[in-house]
Image (cartoon, rainbow, N blue to C red; front, side):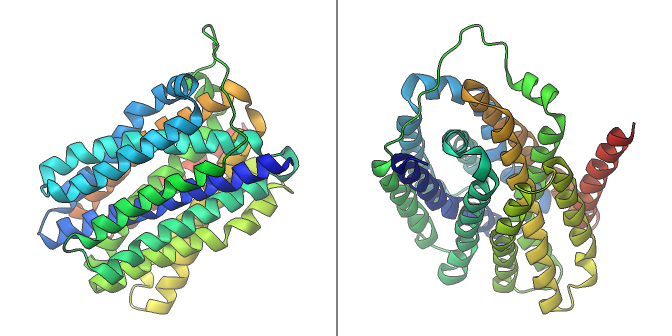
Length: 378
């Protein structure tokens, strides 16, 4: 790989990873603040779904914006916008304002992830794509896992966690200075490939992205609430989320190595199945902190493994403007899944307190595995 490509890959991964720490901070921070105020789990889930709604609405427009402004410039604009929005969460400290602010945060996040993943997948060579994507998702997960640990040090009260998040968004801009291998997306006015085409051509990848987004965003939003409602203290609930995040880090390298050595579609099914089994066992281990930590570590690893394998399959199958459109398709699917995931799970937790969290996760993974296996056999 050319030296400029390596430097750019490092810069883009560093940029999005710095932002990932803020993303890992925001969801549990706001959910725990609302929980401390006695807000119902349904309202917490609906509010947590607003960034996903913003991602869903904005994602189809990102490829066109990236062509017009350039990927690097669009990344910088999205980061600056995100910094301002994070501070506005504290300025307008009310549930109703948070619905609007988090919507726009989701829109800017769509630009960040679609541009960065298109950039990385374009530069990654085919013979090392699984390892590079695994490293990207592992570093991303590590930074997201550090977000909840910030809450454990700063608490959920006052300006400190919000100032910390805003500063780290600014820090995320710095690595882009070293990005030299800037890619340009060709504009094709009559390009027949669109987001619907992506879903139709690659249904397994699309379903995998949906399951990953549903499980990940629901976990980051409502796993702390599940833990508190199961009898854990606030700090311990945040720590369990961090353990879930660390599982997302340390299992990615072996999953990435497997993705370069075995059938990737089959590996995707395995990751979903194992994630469902881990979720199903959660209610049986809440009385043992060690067992619960171990299970959450595995759950986080397999959930993020779904993302690692899905992104690897996308980079293997699509190129150029089609890759950008496929990445936007990922954004749309992520937005849909993340929008309905916390909302459905929050209602389920109100009906079955707190096992509704587990029920929804298990049903989702079971539907995916059964439907894909049946299709393979038919």
